[in-house]
Image (tube, rainbow, N blue to C red; front, top):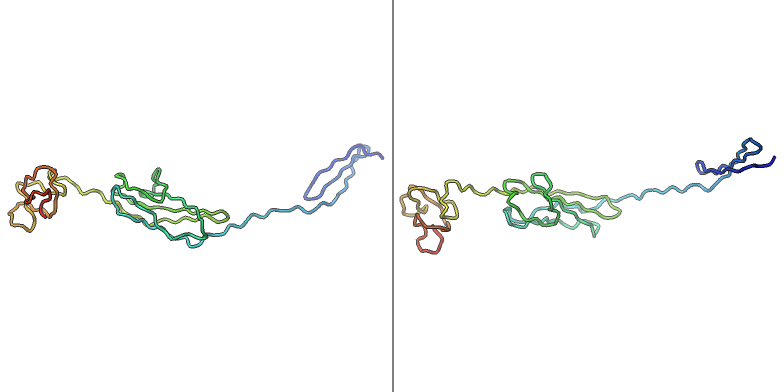
Length: 191
């Protein structure tokens, strides 16, 4: 009987040839080469992944630095995330961070994320540091830098004055020396 058409299709690595013969279908199976299955590459783990520490004075205007030992194997790409009370600080994504006024009274951390091709990424977070609030200036005389109390008279602590209020020096005179604390006129009182 004559073959009117041939159909080929691949199913589970076997090519099926179907011939339509006078309105009936006859199928032949032709073996093919086994399919090659790609195995995913197994990622390794970075080693010597140290926890960072924050270096620098904990006050506004000071540049802090994330310090850590080298991660291995060499040429690990590092990404930095600085956080205030656990919330990411916008734009703070470098190894250094300059303390801002908004950080006063809060805790800062830095997280380092290390990446290398063929390796699982690793993440380590520093211990937190506290940025202190400025000392309250309520009840302090504005003529001095350093809190000099507002009173009828203020003397240097440990001096011969009779108060009623005393101040531990040194304090800087930034206005008028209304209490006579700067005996030698150099701008510093209670030296």
